[in-house]
Amino acid sequence: MATSATSDQLLVIIDSAARQMDGESVRIAKDVLSAGAATKLCLPEGPEEFARALGRRGSRRPVLIGDDRALVRAVTLLHRRRELAGCALSVVPVGETALAESLGVPAGTVAAARAVLDGAVRRLDLLVDDSDGVVLGALGIPPAPVREPVAAAEPVGVSAGRPWLRTTYRSLVRTLAVSRPARLPAIPSPGPARLRVEVDGETVVDLDQPVEAISVVPGSGGLFTVEVRPLSVDAEATALLVSGRTVTVAGADFRYRADAAVSGPVRRRTWTAREGAWGLTLPDGHA
Image (tube, rainbow, N blue to C red; front, side, top):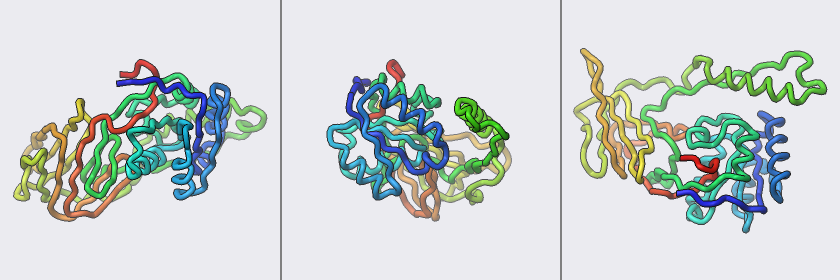
């Protein structure tokens, strides 16, 4: 369900990592937002200032300029304050943005900023675990390797007097970096594990069957799809697919990747789906 996101009062929170990583994209986002609405800028220097700024938003609509980690941080703060139902978020992605893009946020700075001004709020499902953590997108056990950021020097003459060329160059670098093969995994693969997986109270796989991987991805209607890949010695194992609202994983110590972060080790964790738990501004008409 989508509702209008129109508001002439915006609180634009610019994450410190975004300012350091791509100041040009931040400047462009500020210019587009300021041209279309009354904006109050906030430049928090750390998590505490970030939380304080979000908590003091008043009647202003919060707009985040930052990466996936900043988006997850904002949703987590609002969830733990029990304010998600009454506060829709808007985001202009800068930095690592795979999560935001998977949720429907435009990749380009100008397009994302225009969506903030002209888009509509869609209610999205959320996974909440038994430690009050949240998952906006996908959950994976064990954690999948992540790509290591690769810094690239700008060619001589790109910056001098030609900011539009610098922006184009940086966009090209980011595009090429997405297709660059990963150099080193963030966490060594732990190999098969003996874990019990239960979906809505029913056992999908037990401790006597080693598993290679477990993933949980959003489905529809408040349901999530759980995929379990059992270990197979002679041939590729057939994945087990189950849909449900509650997923419990227990057994040997395991780590998991939830959105942009790795957590654990833990011996047991339960995730529960909450339908339409949070609002995100997306381009009008986004399915």
